[in-house]
Length: 192
Image 1 (cartoon, rainbow, N blue to C red):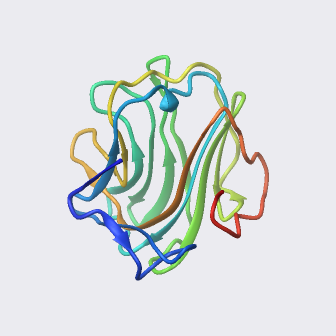
Image 2 (image 1 turned 120 degrees about the vertical axis):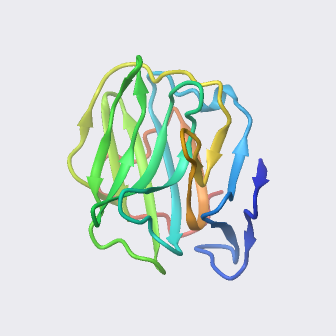
Image 3 (image 1 turned 30 degrees about the horizontal axis):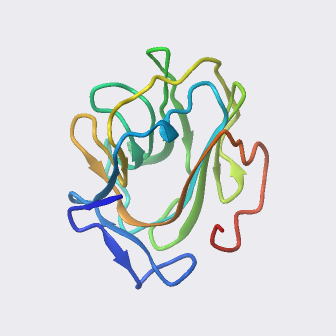
C-alpha cells in the first residue's frame, strides 16, 4: 500500500485501536497495484469500512471511498451531493454496461462514524449504512469487467479525481464472501 499526498495515520480520530487513515480531500489517497484479489468476476464479495467525514461533497460533486477506473471499468464507491441530497453510490461495470446502485443517504453529517457496506450476493446487490439497507436490493447478473488499474482508496481516478475529506478505519475487501444480505449489527471490534 502506498500513501499518496498527505494521506497518513491519524491518532486524533479512530473507530477502533486509537488510529485511522486521514485524507484531507486534496490529493490524499492510498494506492495498491493491480492484483487478482481485486477481480471479483461473477462471485460474491463485500467491501466494508468505517468512515467519518470532515467535509461532505458540495452540490454536483462526490467523494470516493474506492475506485478502479482509469483505462477500463471495475468499481466505484462514493457519496454524491445531488442538489443537496446525498446519495451513496455503488457503480460496477458488468460486461461493459454500467450498473448504478444509487441510494439516498438521509441524515449523513460530519463528525460521526458510519459503517458502510457494499455487498454482492449472487445476482443481488446491497448497500448498508450502520447495518441497515439503504433502498431496495438491486438485481443484476453477469461478470464484473476486469480492470488492470491501480486500486485507490480515498479517491476515484476517472476524470477529475474526487478525494475523500475525512477518516477511514477497518477498510476490508472480502472476495468470495457476501457478509450481509439483511439488517445486521455493525462490528463492535477491530477485524482479526
